[in-house]
Image (cartoon, rainbow, N blue to C red; front, side, top):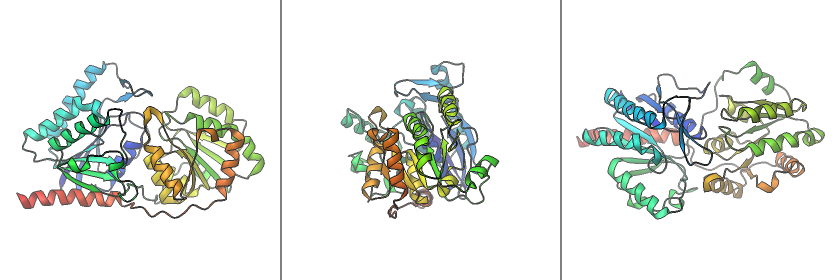
Length: 395
C-alpha cells in the first residue's frame, strides 16, 4: 500500500483540520496515512481508524493574526520551532511517504516556512521520489501587496510541488478570483469539487444529544466553528431568545466551539439559565446530526459549516467572518445568498428585535436546491492515485 504524509496547521479555528481529516477519511482505503497536526489537539475530535496522528507541539496565532505563540508548552517559540522542524524531518525519514500532502501552504501559512521549507528541501534532495501536493480550499486570502504575494506563491509551487488540488467547483468559485496567476503554475492543477462530510450512519450520541434531538420541538441550531470569533452572534441570539419564546415553539441549541473563552462561556451559561428555550454546550462531534434535525442553522460562514448546510439542505443564516481583511466567507456566502440557498447576517441585523424578525422570516422560507460539485473527497483520491500511476508508467 502506498504511503501518504498529510501536514495540517490550524492556527485559530478548526476548519482546516476538519476539512483535512475528511479528505484523509476518503484516502484510508488506498493509502497508509501519517497525519501531522500542528495546531492544538481537540478533545473528542474523531480520527478515521487506521490513521496515525502525530500532534506536534502546538502553535497558534493571536486574534489579530500578528504573532505566533506556543500552546501548553514551557519552551520558547524558537525552541518549539526547532523541535518541530527536526521532528518533521524525522517522521519523513522513517515513514518515507509516496505522497506528501500540505494543506494551504504556500498560499497561506508561510510563517511556517521554518519547518516546511526544510521538509520540502529534503524531498528535493532525495530526487523527488515523494510527490508533493498542495491541498487548497476554493478561496484564498488576498494581501495588500497582492502582486508580491502571488509571485512568492508561484516561486514556491514551481520549485517544490507536483500537484495543486483545489477543493471547490470552478463553475461556482474559480480560484482566479482570489489568485490571478494560476496559469503560471508548472504543476498539475485540478478542481476536486467541495469536500463534504457524509451523513452519519449510527452516530454515537450522548444522553444529552438524545435529549435535544428527541425533544419534539423545532430546533434552532447555533454554532461558531472553533469559537474564537463570532461571540457577538451568540450574545445577540441569547438576547433574542426571550422574544422568540413569545412568538414560536422551539429549542435553541448553541455550540460555542472548543476555543470559546472560559469567561464568555460562563456568562453565556448564566444568561441561558433563565431562558428555558436555550441549551449551551462547547463541542460535539455530531454537529451534522444536529444540522439534519434542525429547522434552522445560525452560524459563521466557514467552509465546513457551509458544506454541512449544502448537504443537509437546512434553512440557514450565516454571519461571515471579516477579521484581518479576510473576505473568504463574505464572498462565498453572498454568492450562495444570491442563489437563494441561505441568508447572510449583516452587522445591522444583530439587534434582538431585528434578529427575531429575520429568524421568523427565514423559518418560513424554503432554500433553493444546490447544484454544486460536492465530490471533493472521492475526486481527491482519484487524482492522487492518478499522480502515482503516471509516475510509475514514466519510471
